[in-house]
Amino acid sequence: MAQNANTIESPDVNIMRKTKNKSNNAWKKISKNYELYIFILPALLYFLIFHYGPMYGIQIAFKNYIPTKGIWGSSWVGMKHFNYFFKSYYFKVLIKNTVSIALYSMAAGFPIPIILALLLNELKNERFKKLVQNVTYAPHFISTVVLVGMIFAFLSPSNGIVNEIIKAFGGEPIPFMSKASMFKSIYVWTGVWQNAGWSSIIYLAALSSIDPQLHEAAIVDGATKLQRIRHINIPGIMPTMVIILILNSGTIMNVGFEKVFLMQNSLNMESSDVISTYVYRTGLLNAQYSFSSAVGFFNSVINFTLLVIVNNIAKRLNETSLW
Image 1 (cartoon, rainbow, N blue to C red):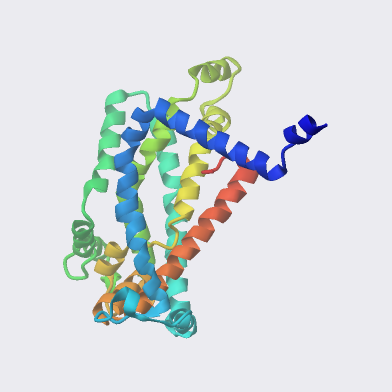
Image 2: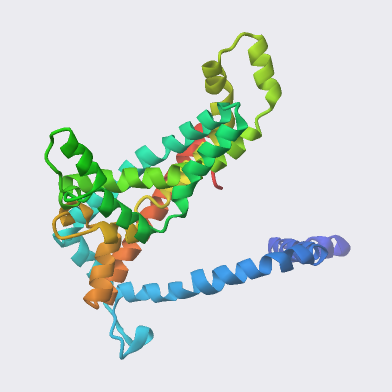
């Protein structure tokens, strides 16, 4: 009986023993594959130093930051800056502009690379296919500054090529960049022109991984080209489409600052003022560091929330997700 009493261990001892065994197993796996961990170490350090390290500064969103006192010395103010932003006039305007531009960009920019990839995949003439690919990839390498300069030159009411064509057909020149109603369309469709070809690369890669025997069997069964695209190609790249959609949803509120800022002027401010330009204006130009940090932090929280929601929806509907 005494021996049985000694062999019976308490639940706490069992938990400690299991935890110790797990820890030992983890260290054994690390020591066994230490080359892989050394290989990933630079990337891990990069993210820790340059991405996670600076995040300690986000606390100024909850403080009344004064540069002479530093981040740690400034006093805490809680949610003051967030409440001020939610009650300000700019809140509705910024949310409306940011969300509308983001959704417009996604609605136009998400399907076009897929359609382009499906069309390129059907081209049999390799030389023509490469020519189309090079032509559609090239705009991606144009810098934002040069792109906006081209937009201003092409849409100039005095000598822009678009207005010259309008005048040739008897119309009146249109001040495109001065019209607030046209800003979002110009922003979105120039972005589609610039990035559609480059974004189609990943879909072309996914299409190349589809088993050719599926197409051969479908041809034998009498399937047309459109039927093969619908029933073989699109389901084949569906997981890639879902992953790209999830990633895009995680940056839906991050409307490109550079392009919006360069295209922005006082006449189109009504529809071009987005959260990123507002953060720049209040934070750097007006030196309201805490307030601009609060606005930027709010923007990041919305992005993270959307990413989690879309990821969970995709996981339930399509069993494809980031985690």
